[in-house]
Length: 616
Image (tube, rainbow, N blue to C red; front, top):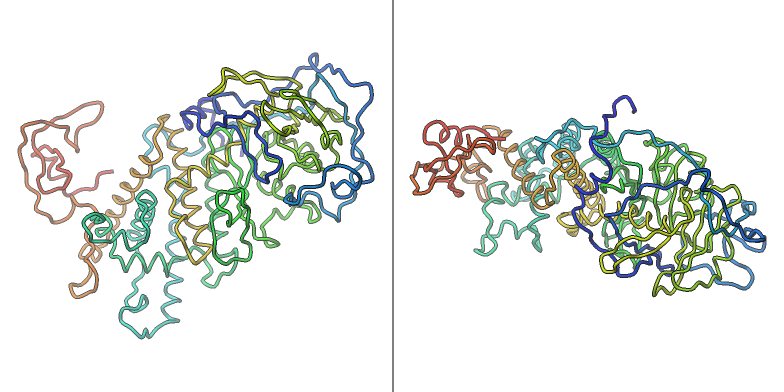
C-alpha cells in the first residue's frame, strides 16, 4: 500500500477545519459517560487537537501509593461480583466476557499521581487523498471515484437479469397493466436518472412516492415528470431493484457483495489520519427480520446494526461490518473462541497499517481487547464498564469528590486507567488508554470560560465523534429512512447515501472549499441529470407511444428539447452562461425566452451551442 500513497496535502487539523466549520452538539456537562446506559454520550469538542501525547523518559517518574492494588479476586465469575458489591448491569451484553474462556491471571495495578504508558508504536502511513482529484473536481467526479463504472455496470446487469427472471416467472401476465406486461430492460440513462431521482427525493421529502408525481398545484414539480413516468419508476423502485449477481441470493448475499465492492473503493480513494473511531451505526427497521436489534437508547429503537470504522478527523467512513448473528462475516483469521469485540476490531482494522489510535466506547472495552491491540501495535482509548475483569477493583465502589481524579497504572506500564468525577456529575467517568499520561488539561468550552479534565478524556471527546458525525450526515437527506418491506433495500439505499457522504468529504478536501451538504447534493443531481441526457438512446428521446398509458417522459434537459427557443433582448446585461468564466467575465443583453430559467447567451455562437450540446 505504501508505494501508492501520495504525500500529505495538509495536516489533520486543517482537514478537520475544512470538514467541520463549527462546533455542534456540545453538552453543557463536561462528564461524557452515563454508566446507566448502553450507549455513550460524548462532548463533541472539535477545535482541540486530538493527537496523542506520550511523555519523554525523564517525565515518566511515578509517585506510587505504599501498597499496590491487586486485580480481581478469584471469587468472581465472568466479571460479576459474588460477594458484597454492585451487581453487573443487566443491559451489558458485550460478548467480550465469554463463559468458555478461562479466568485471566490477576493484573497488578498501582495508584499513581504521575507517569505515563510506555507503548511506542510508530505511525508511518501518509494520510490524505489517494484519488486523482484536484481543485477542479466536481460532485459527480467525486461520486464516480467511489461509485465506479464497475459498480454501476454491476448494478445495471443485476437489475436487468433479475427483472428478466421475474418476467419469465410471471408471464403470461393476467392483466395488461401488470408490471411484467410491458417491462423493458433498464438502460444506462435510466439508471443514472434513477440515482438522480432517489437523491433528490432525500432532499424533497414527501409522505409517499406517488406524491412526487402529483399534479396538484402546490405539489406539482415538472422535473420528476420529465425524468420518469411514475409507473416506470415504481416498477424499478418497488419490484425490479436488485444488487446481487445471484438472482436467487438469500440472506446477506443479497447485498453484502455490493457493499464490499464499495468499501474497497472507499479505502482506495482516501487513507485516514492516525485517530480512528469505532462505533455502532444503526439503520432504522421495524419490519420482520431475524437479526433485527432493539436498543431504546438509540435514535431508532428497532434497527439493523452495523459496526463502523471512521476517520476521526473527517468522519470519512472506512469500513463496515453488518451484524447477521452467527452469519456475520468476521475475518476468517479471527479466533473462533475470542469475544465479539476482538472479532469486530480484527475485521475492521485488517486493511490498515499499524500505529493507528482507536477510540471506542465501553461496549467493546475489555482487558483481552487491550492486550490484543497492543500486540498488534494499535493504540486504544475508551470508556470502561467497571464490572469488567482484570481492572482495579476499587473502581466498583469508589467515591470521589467533584473534579477529583484517581489514576491507576498497570504493572507493565501498558495501560493507564482514570476515574474522574466532573462538576455536577452523579457518577465518576472511568476510562482507559494505552497512550496517555497522568495530566489534567484546561481547555476553553462553549458555555464556560474553561474546563479542566484528564488529558485523554478530553482526547476521547475530540476523537470519538467520527461515526456519530457520519450517522448525523447521512440522516439529513437519506431516502433510506422511507418505509420498506425488504430489509436489504434499507441497506442498499443507506450504502448509496454513505457513498455520497464520502464523496462530499473528498470534494471538500480536493477543492479545499467548505461546500454545504445540501448544495453538494443538488449539484450532484444536476450533473447526474446532465449525464443521463447524454446517454439517452434515440428511442428514449422519442418517448413512449402515444397510446401508452401514463404521461410522456420528456428529455430531462429542457434546453435540449424541441421547445420554441427564441432570442430576446433585455435592458440589463448578465454573464453569458456558455463563454463567461470567473476569470474572464463576458456579458450580454440577449437571453432565451423559451427556457424556464431565461439564460443569457450571446446571439452568435453561444445560443446555438447552448441548445445543441451538452455542457459539463
